[in-house]
Every structure is written in structure tokens, then in C-alpha cells.
Length: 458
Image (tube, rainbow, N blue to C red; front, side, top):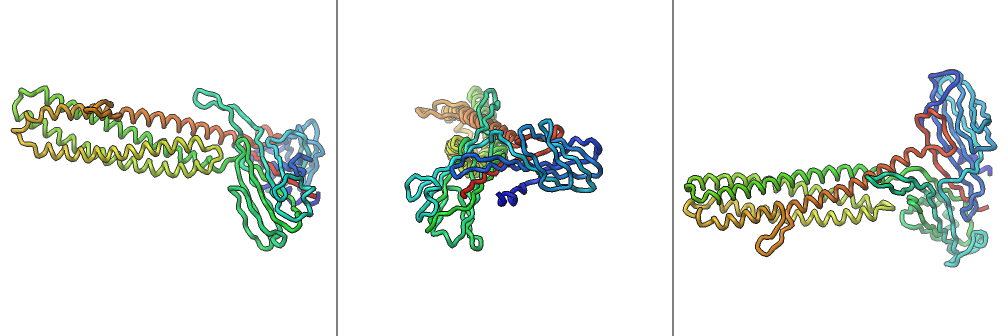
């Protein structure tokens, strides 16, 4: 148990305020570390809570910290007095600048995560006790199971989700005793002096499963630690990426709407030209001039669409890389893969439209006045094509989906991505709000908590 005294120093410090009986200018930082001391199979032996409180300010203070589920409360370090009564921890002292207080307590409160460990020696299932001292390859398979399921509202629906946690396994082995070492995906092995350090990270949503294999002449393990923190490293990057992606989709939809309106205007201009067949050739020439101008605008818009589509494809590639790193990103990755195919198809169609547009523009610029009547039928077909491109329909025997259908697809994709972003926002909020295990001062501004699963082998 002496070894535990060295790991009782918490990992992080987060500032929050307290209720002080004597000084209103005093603030504190409160940081909980919950040590789950387990047997080799992961079953819980004891839970120890260590609280680090930093008091800042000047004057006497009294802090009432949460501790309803604590027992055997003791001060570890610091000048303040620590007592336990009425299901809470009372801390009294005097500060002039900064003062640190550490206290510990034990609890039987259920942990938010459970741990299960299974062992295989040379491929056969065993226990650590039976494998200890023998020669061979020991495979350690562990499962961290998330118990914190919450209901959140996503759009108009309620969904069951799990509070995001990041679990990090840390192990150290004397290099002289190791013949070989391997880990499951996401693991990292580093030689540090005379030791081999292993790190393995994952997110229990709801389960995180991993394994570690060590080959030794004599199986003997030092204690393993699994740190679990309420957070998900992948969420921050994905949320930022999704925000940019949604903005790009909206921009793309605006470009498409302008394109659709322009096509309708072109179709209407041609219709007016056809309806006025009895007008003079001069009038027809005016309409041709308008067509040349509109087609010029059309080409510029197509250039903008090609650039926007290229940016969308680049963002899609980055989003897919982020989604591949998520434990539960398969649905989002599938959606992004499908969206990429649609975008690449759209880019190809726009390129073809641009080429056709240039040919049509050149055709109108070179058209002689005497040929106006001869192209009236061609104008009718062009009008039908423009309507089909704008709204969808048949051109000859070919069905064209139309920009309206593409916009509908973009709208559906945007709604689905927004729903995923809303879900991730909710998960991030759950992780941020899970900041204590045994309680905190009622008016605390901030607090934090982490769990250390300490696996003993002696």
C-alpha cells in the first residue's frame, strides 16, 4: 500500500470558488482523483478518493466539500484542519496567498465504469495467479464498460447516449525481462532507458476493449494503471470540422440556387424569343445579345461551383480521416463516403455543363441574323434542356435529375450532419458537466474528476 502514496497526487488542477464563512475574497481549486484498486481480474477491492484543494486569497476560511458517500476521511497534506460530519467534509484554515490541502476518503459508491480482465497463457485461458512465474506469452484482455447512460434530445427525438470517457492504459516493464511485447490497435510501445513503456487509449462507448501481450521467461507483472477521464479527444476536432463542413454545404446550396435561378431566367428569355417570332430581326438580335450575356454569367457561376465543389471534397476527405479515428464514427463515415461520391459526380456534371455552355455561347456569338428563324426549333429544345437541368425532367430519352434534386440531396445531407453535430455537442456537454464523483461545494465555478484503475498483482 505504500506505493499508492506516490500516485495520490492528482493529474490536473481546475479552479473553482467556495462558500467561505470568514472571507469573501477567497477562492479555491478542487480536483478529485478516484483510485479504484482492483484485483488481477479487474474486480474491485477498494475505492479511495483523493481531493486536492488549493485555497487562494487572504484570511480565514471554512470550506464544506461534498462527501456524502465517504468514510475514513483523513488529511494527507496541508496546514488546514479536515473533519467529517453531517455527510460532508469540513476544511478550516487560514491563508495568506496560496495554500494546498490534500485529503482522502474511502467510498462504496458505484463507479461509472467497470473493468474486466481475462488472461491467456500460450493461447489457453487462465488466471494471473496460475500464469505467474511461468515461461511463455501472456495475453491480457481487458474491457472497460461505461455505465453512465443518459437521455438527450437530438432534434425532435430522445436518444440514449453514454457520457464520453477517454481510457488510457499505462504499463511499464523492465526491458531485460521482456522477450517480445505487442498491443491491440491504438497502442504505443516506447523504450525509456531500461524500461519498456506501453500506452493504449480508447473510448468506452459503451465498451472499450483492448489487449496486451508480453513474452517473458518468468511471468511477473508490475501494477497496471488505467486512467479514465470524462472527455473525448476526437470530439473537438470533429465538431470544428463539422461546423466548417456545414458552412460549406450552405455555401454550395446558395451557389446552386443562384445557378438554378439563372437557368430559369435563361429558359424564360428563350421562351420570350420564341413567342415573338413575328418581331423584327433586330429584336431577335437583341435577344441573342442577352443570351450571350447570360451565358457569360453562367460560365462564371460554373467556375464558382467547381471551386466550391473542390473545397467540399477537400473538407470531406479531412472529415473522413477524423471519423475513422472515432470509436462510434461508422455511420458518419458511411455518410461522408456517400456524400463524397455525390460531390465528385456533381463536379463532373458541372464540368460537362461548362463545356456545353461555352459551345452554346460561341454558337450564339457567331450566329448570323439570317439564321435566326432556322434555329427557333433548336431554341425550343435548349429551353426544355434548361428547364430539365433546373427542375429535372427528360431531354429526348434521357432523364436529367436536375439541380432541384441535387439541392434536395444537399438539404438531406446537411440535416443529417447537423443532427450528428447536435449529438456531438450533447456528448461534449455531458463530458464537461461530469466534474465530480463525491460532490463539490454548492457554488463551485469549476471542478474536475478522473478515475485511476490500479490493478494489483501481488
